Image (cartoon, rainbow, N blue to C red):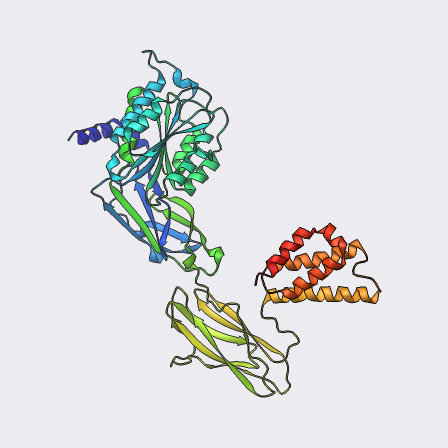
Length: 518
C-alpha cells in the first residue's frame, strides 16, 4: 500500500515533466544465440511515459545487411509479475562545486547522498538487479562494483572525498574505471537492460566527446538518464540521453533531486517486457559474421542502428566450394567418371541449377547417385547430401582439359574446378606451388653460378640471395618432412662461413630442429 501511494505521489509530482518529455524507443543488445532467430528486447514509451498496449509487427521496419526482414518480424509484449532485472551504474559528480552551501548551510554533496539513498531504497534488488557506483572530477573513480547490497553502495559514496574539476568523458570512456568497461566486465548478460544515471552540478572544463560517448553507449546498448543539479541541462547530456533512449532532467532543490532519483528507479523497473524477433539468412564467409541492422519504430519515426555478431555456425558455405577434381589422363576418345558429393552443412540448400562451362569434354551423367532424384532444381536438407556423377571424355587428341562446375544455390553458390588430361605440372595445392617455385629459383640460381664459374661461397651478396630464398622457404613451410630442404640449408652452412655471420648459426639450428620433427 505504501509503495502504491509513493508511486502515485511521484507520478503526480512529475506529471508536467512527463508531458514535456519526448517519447522513448530503445533496444537491448541483439541476441543471436538462437540463430537464425534473432531477438532483441525493447522499450517503447509514448510522450507521457506510458507503455504502448497494441504494438504490431507492422509498427516496425527491420533491415539487416540492407535486406528487408519485415516478412519474418514478430513482436510480443507481456506484463511480468516481477520487476525485470537491470544492470545500473550511478555516476556522480565529486567536483569542488559539490562543497558549496545553500542558504540553509547545507552542502550540495549532502543532497547527493540523500538522492542516491532514495534511489537504492526504491530499487527491488530481489529480482537480480545490481547497482555499481562511479564518481568523477577530472578523472573517473570506480567506487563500487556491481552489487545488490544497498549499504555497500551507500558506504562507498560516503567514503568519497570531493574536490577537483569537471570532465564528462572519463566516467563514460575511461578504459579502466569508465562505465563502458564496467558494463563489459561486470554485466555480460545481453538480456539485462543497462542503465546509467548521471548526475552533475557543473559545466565541463573541456568540451565532451559526445559523438564517441554516444557511439560506445549504443554499441553496448546502454541508456542514460541525465540529471543536472542547480544548472541548465547541458546540451551534450541532453544529446547523450536522447540518442541512447534515456531521458534528461533538470532539478534545483534537494527534494526535487530525491524525487527524480526515485522516479528514475521506478521508471527503469517497468514490468512490461517487449521482444522483437526476425528470422535471418545464413552467411557464406567470415565477412558475413558482423551484421549491421536498422530498426525503425514507425509510430515515433525513430531509427536505431546496431551491429551484431552471428555465431560461427551461421556460415553455410558448401564444403566443396573451391575444390579441384582430377579426372586423370584417359586415352583419346575414352572417359573417366568421378562422383561429386554436395553436402548441406547447417541449413537447407536449394540447388537451382548446375552448369559446366565449357561443357565440351565434361557432362553430368547422373543427378542422384544411389537415388532416384532428377536434375535441378532440388533441395538438400541440412546435414544431408546429394551425389552427382560427372564424366570427362578426352578428345581425339590427348590434351589437358579444364572446366568449371557452377552450382547456383541458396544460401550460397559454389564452384569447383574440373581438370583432366596431360599437364606438365598438376598443382593441387597452392602451397605446393609456392614450394616448387622456391626450389626452381634455387636451381636456376645454381645454374647461373655454374655458367659464370662462380663458387657458391664466393661472395657475401651471393650468400644473401641464397639465404633470403632459404629463409623464405622456412617461413612458408615450417612443417616437418622437408628433409631435402634441411640438407640444402646445412650444405650451405658448412660451405659458406658467411652464413654464420649474416643469419646466425643459432637461428639456422633452430630452424633445422623445426624441420626434422617428423
